[in-house]
Image (cartoon, rainbow, N blue to C red; front, side):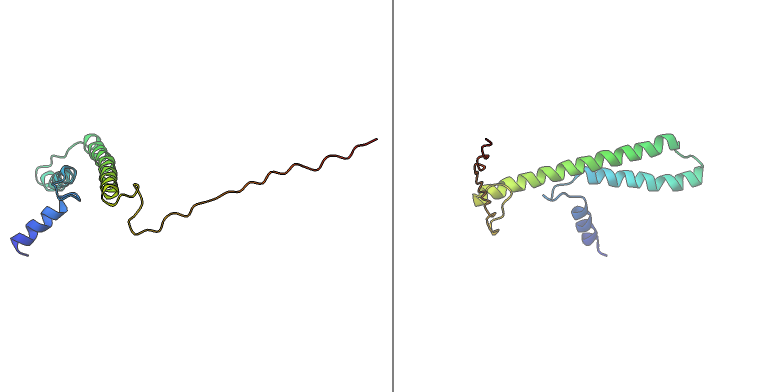
Length: 120
């Protein structure tokens, strides 16, 4: 694999949908490198990070990055919907080639009940 193909792969892998470098993905890659490097260091020098620090830190980081990735995805989706609506003149959430939503018409007929028979 040539160097240019590796660089293209890394550029694509660590970029968001707009092509900008994604800090979250770079953070995940850095944490993954630290986790992977922890094991050879521990085996060679018998120095391991305490489990009560290491595991919660990784779980907290993973949860935070997951929530942030969801928020970013939602923001990008909303921005693209607004841009599409601006370009097409259609309301947000409708596609340019989609059929219009069917209109629902409800007819309500009110009738007076028959008068009660007189007892007498």
